[in-house]
Length: 494
Image 1 (cartoon, one colour):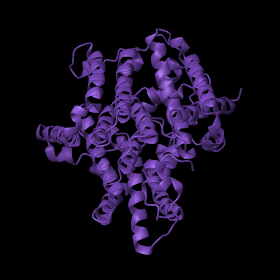
Image 2: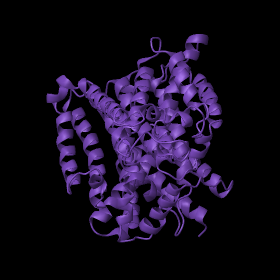
Image 3: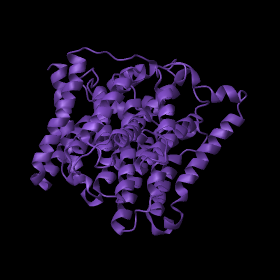
Image 4: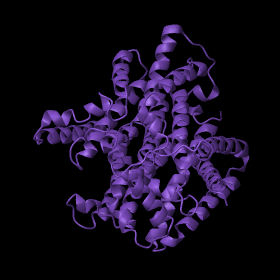
């Protein structure tokens, strides 16, 4: 069988299972259902692999994924058969993007940017996971590069990676950013205006070498950015609607699980965003508290399960005793229970301040203890300021945009996203303190590539900020669509 046909069949199963899982999670709109096709299928792959390893049956990791994926699609078809039109539209949208991704590899023959990390990801995918190796020690020791991305690459034809997966992540990230911008913008801002702003921002992005490389870069950074944007979207929609209902719950859960399994430092970024979510005064009903507990618990369990299933040495590297991963599992369940309980309501507003304080103290401590504090602070300046890292003028434009757009006349959604972007930047640097320093000069520096984790969120922030500025400057009118008339309509059909 030709590799392109094999990949097309795998992506088809991903589309049906992911869209089905999205329906089961309560999503009813076409675009987020298509996005769920990628996100949920990735989570299914991660959890099914963990299950096969935990059962001592690594040779069944592919078969278990196929079985669970088919089960999700069938279950959704039975339970939500009346939604077949929306589901079919979402699958078609997913399929169109998947075909574009496959075309970039098998028609245009666009190659990947090579690096030692790329070789290790391919090795884990093809030799360990695709080869059903009973010895998972190399994957356990390679925890820094995550587990979700090589697991997905291993779904490719025998001896090959799933080449269309990486460009598909990139395309889905753009689709998600555009949809979130439409949901978060005021209804008086027309979709045409948003598309115009999107086109300008996209044209600028094409000029940035890092963005061009990211679409075909075989590393978990792009998947991390996608997961973080999902979680950011869940938080932003919850704050906007003042409801923690189906779409925010699904986006938060899927994004959080991807975030903590795509890269090990993702745990810090996800925890930062969950602190913002937990600080919201939304959890007044038993249902919402149970949903918050489920999201927090499943994200934490996914991280613990990864470390336990592979007997990962990550805590040993930090000087912590054996069995700490089991302690983390207990802390996760207890912590999720406490955060979702009414006993935390009086102190929720301090969650974010606590996390910001921890990050700030950690960064200050790293700088204070450095033999060259100024050099440490300016470690990323050659990459972001002088273009050595492939970012061109992206950092300059981001800072200038934040200053020029201002805060006073911007919406609360823009201010929230700008705050989340700043927190994520701090969290990226904080996570690097566990690995020493703030990086070094060059494209292949890990911190330089970790900026990809926050770039989709910055893209969303820019879309909203500039759309609001253009609307205020030139005016734009649009009839409010049913999905934009209030929080109770947030999940209505497109």
